[in-house]
Every structure is written in structure tokens, then in C-alpha cells.
Image 1 (cartoon, rainbow, N blue to C red):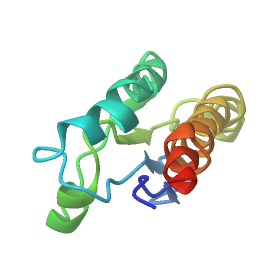
Image 2: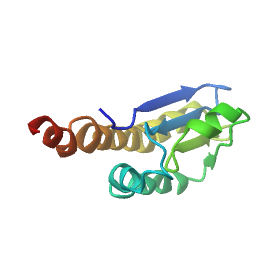
Image 3: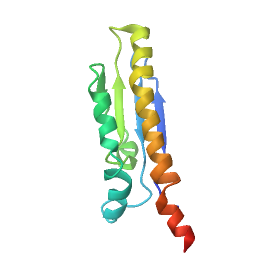
Image 4: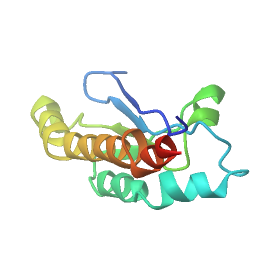
Length: 127
């Protein structure tokens, strides 16, 4: 199976500022395999999910200091820090419930449908 992996990580660096990493890390080189890039990243509209989260004022892009992390994530990876210091725990719960959870479920659905159980794999099994 050549479908991307599914990665979800919630790092609690502080009580009011967790980091969310949500991605479909590729199993193939995206530069050398443009069809793979098109099938699993461009066609799935993953970038739209990141854009939805970035509309929230408390959500900021997260840039990992780890070279490893920066090398293994896909071009559509969602790496964000949610900073709710001013709004406290209630605001954090609201953001996770109303924004992070739906985006994570959508990315999981994208992974399950075209990636894990998609038509592409079923077609290969017929051969």
C-alpha cells in the first residue's frame, strides 16, 4: 500500500498553548512522483483544512525547531499553536470542540476514504 500515513499529535507545551500537528506524511518522494502528490494532496483539498484553523485569532503557525519534523511532514501539514492565555480553559475547550475536532475528523475522513480505503488500492487488487 502506498497511501500516506496518518499523523495526529497534540503537544501540550503549556496549559494554555498546545501545539497541533495533523498530517498525512507521504510514503513516496513528492517531487519525483507528481501523480502521488496530485492524488493524495492536491485532489483532497487538505490545504483548505489548515486555512480554516488559521482564521481563528488564537491559532498561529507553528515552526518546529526539529529538523526531522520539518523534513518528514507533507506540504499540506497542519502545524499550529493554539494560544488561549487571555481566554483561559473555557476558550481552549471551545476552540478544540468547535474548530480543531471538526478539522481533525475531516482529515481523518480524507485519509480513510481516498488513502486507506480508496479506489486506487481496490483497482490494484483486481489485477
